[in-house]
Length: 526
Image (cartoon, rainbow, N blue to C red; front, side):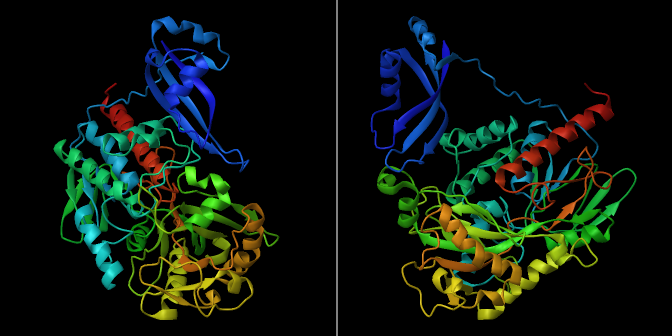
């Protein structure tokens, strides 16, 4: 017999096993609990003096425990496992996927299981080589424009917190989480309310995924830039910088949000696009222990590194919000272009670094940058990324302390928080590298955030600029079947249809499902 129990509250300081707690509550023996599966886990920290962990669990019980169903908190449980329809996919032309970030990975994974033997083109290196290239930039400031924190196997999310949170409510999310676990993620990502993998685990998982796909017939071409497109009535040809060409009737574009050259090439080939809103701002960095205490008080010693999320709306019509919060993480040098500064956050699985950081972002609308091309947002991003670089001209990022920033001054030295940015920082007036409305919204919004997160505007906290690539400023227009120009399927964050690892993975997976359904219809298969 299987049952589900919701809303099990356990004090965060309690060291008793969950199995023991449940056996006591249900008045059964521990040995009668044959299997215990946690289906959800969250922290209720609304009362700092009584923080509890809330569980929902699925129990497989021995037959003599039928009396537990009389408990009002216990309900019978029926398995509702998603069984994916892996159709045998045979076509004269194999699917071609450009980009092996989350969207490309899950599109390729599903198509591989359908025996489609997809061809994957990735401008960056495979993960083993990519890690070395990233380290060369972080240590020696030698940037490979095609293989870096933005480009390469795994996409930009590989060098991030590996956050798997999403507002999407879709049954396919459980499929994606299960696949991550299949290839090496910890089981807890399936039930934590704020699941994350961590950059260290992501690197191993992505390699495992690629290796399995290769064994199933997928073909990978790394260090290969998709730089030209030829469109015909019966297929399209993806042309690459190394002279390789691929004919296909299913060209999936999982470009990522930083492939500016590819977007410009596609636009010149008549691929329909439109400008979209994005965001710009800074990274704020506090001591991890300070954030832990801010969120959990004295109970912090019993809990993992604390997260936060906050948004405020200002009278000027702008919003200031936190994004990609990295508990116990680092602020990263994430540019893909020489002579520019781009920041992002990254955490390892243990989230045990000295600081915690998050993006502080302000909405940027097409009216702020649009002149005459849907690609104007790309140039707008680049303009301010280069302004940030010009302050130091050596990859040190412009930064300021919160106290001085709010007073319209520049700090003379760092104090309590040691910035984690790998190239170092230069204390500067952030007005020099941010649009005025972004700068003023940050100054007005920070004190408002501190009303929701007491102490958030701590004097010594570091603001590091510039965070400009949280999302793409352009969207490739597609129809209800996911198609833009004939045979071309834009997917994921770079195409303007996702905002993080999970939504990008979901978008890529759904595109692959549409392709197999479309192929079955065209070929007459059921």
